[in-house]
Image (cartoon, rainbow, N blue to C red):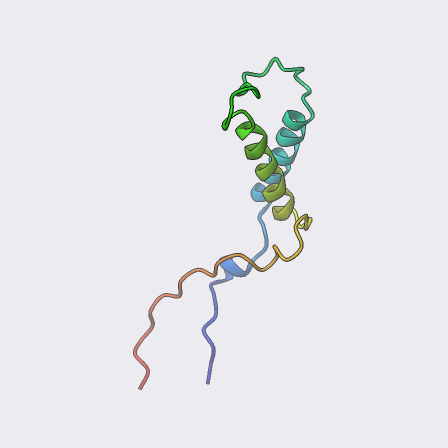
Length: 94
């Protein structure tokens, strides 16, 4: 009995373009979260109740996802949480 295999493009690791985008995400989120613009960047004001910290939440998520794409595990157990792509239906089995 054979097991269905995924196409080679799905099994391959991150591409060079994906790694460069992830590195850009790390640099952008670190620059934003480090407040390198000294507040000059048009951000959501932190004093607004309920929405004031949404920009920090977004950039924190971007940092975690970008690091995960680069192979750096920040949250234990996050590896292997990628949903598997649906397998295309094959010919009916006898």
